Image 1 (cartoon, rainbow, N blue to C red):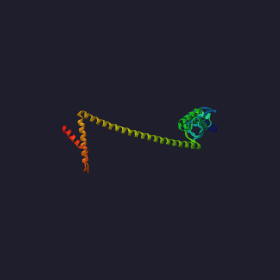
Image 2: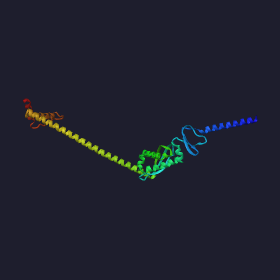
Image 3: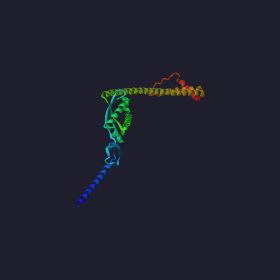
Image 4: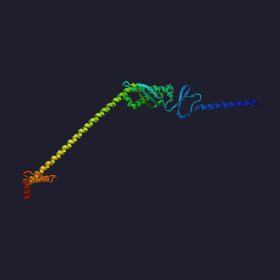
Length: 294
């Protein structure tokens, strides 16, 4: 009886051990990978596979998850490096790079320190690109510089299984001596522009004054032309009257004007003495004769 109980207990322990082994094997063979990660699996020290998000199965005790790599976008700390432009100006460029790991099997087996490697690569590219530009071009073409840095970094880190998503030029700083020189140049340029503006204003004022004088002269000439035309018209009218009515009509008009002039002198205020020319009576007589003759 005791022997039977001993055999049953031994079998139970064996079954329990087998069950425990199966449970452990299942737990060791199932890997649940988060959406933001990828698992690099090795078998006996060699790359076996890369597990994506979700439930994955591996061979227990042979396969082992060696690396858990995040595939989220990463930002390198802001980096500052010195560079010299083509016109020999020392500048300090502050950059930042965003990247993400898309092939973790390349990243973990081909490069040890990804951040340091990218930082070194960016520094070299920035120095090379700025060395081809003058200082004014660096300030004005920052977007082109950013695009060149991003493209070249992307090409050089492709073997590391990395995708460069963005590259930013945060700031371009100058040394104090260069800043002072640029400030003096800026002040000189402002002074030159002020002088040019003042000179252009003076020139415009002279032009407007000349235009005004020319306009006044043209108007005066037009007025004289109108007056001359009026006199010519009056002369033609008298000539036409003489030609039509004869010389007597002209003499009548002259005598009539003389009478009107004498009448005005006599009717003036305070006039008590009238001075008549010698032929005044003759003028009256001629006027009456002509009127009677009409």
